[in-house]
Amino acid sequence: MFAEAASYSLNSQFPFDPDLIYEPQGARWRESALTTETLQLYEASSFLTWRYGQYFNTHITLSGRVMGLTDQRWFSELLPVWNKEMARWLAVSNEKPRKRWRKRARTAIPQQHLWMYVIEHGRIQGIHAHQLCIVPTEQVKAFEEHTRKWWGRQIHWDMDPSAIEVKHYKKITPEDQRLRQVEWFRYIVKSTRRDGGIADDWGVSHPLEKVFKLDPHWATAPVYVPRLYGICRALQRTARETPVWDGHRHERFESMLEQKRFSEVYSGWELDAWRQREKRLLLTNLKI
Image 1 (cartoon, one colour):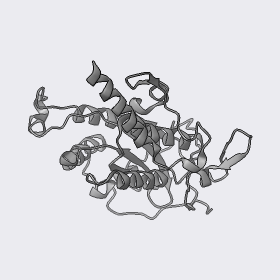
Image 2 (image 1 turned 180 degrees about the horizontal axis):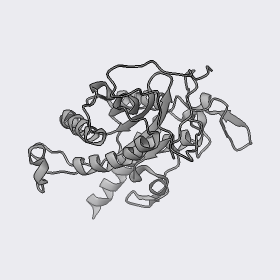
Image 3 (image 1 turned 90 degrees about the vertical axis):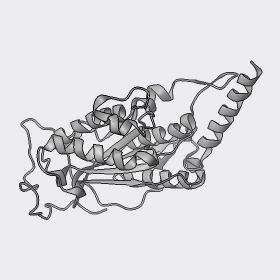
Image 4 (image 1 turned 30 degrees about the vertical axis):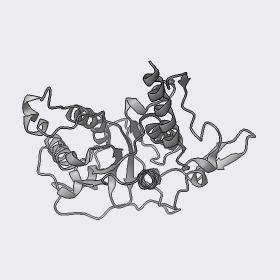
């Protein structure tokens, strides 16, 4: 593991020197490496497929440094506000179009906004966030445009296009979708501390690096953000602990981590479980 570089290269296109990081009085700097956050993020991604039969199909990178946001706490506080806005945007339908979104409502595909993000402080990128979410393929361009306009209004100056990067994969086979989500998950949690671990039923500690098959990564610089991650309410612990009716009984979500089956964290069992539950529910409804 390498030490964090002491400074970053300058870029003349920024409205001011991004290395002059704003530091409010009383700011509490913290290590930016993930620990228990990695477990929560994994549980959320696993629950997404188990509960909804879906995989994340969009990876968004938001660079606070390129935007010129030197106040790390402000950048972190804007992330959930932006997601709240995108939740409203994705909920728009043809039936009840909002006045300012009438153009979008013509082709709107209303859906729930399912997301999770991680904040990093990279050696070169500075403060930035990686978010995984689900966006209908037909709406990706409009989603990106609305995102850029929203963040542009927050910073009050012309934003460098490279400040926001949106990667989206169209509908492919479920297996390809699963592999893509695993790849993205391993990427966004790459800042996980390499000396962390999780114990099995016998008290033996298993390194997170091996459990989640993480590649070697540079150490990240300290930050003064309140939290290093965010998860939408539909994927949070409360939702994960709420039993789901399958037509015969209430089924409870138990991830591979909870079952201490660490070698199966990426086995793809969640989609099969969702299919079986949906099948039982359908048969029950047909009998009624």
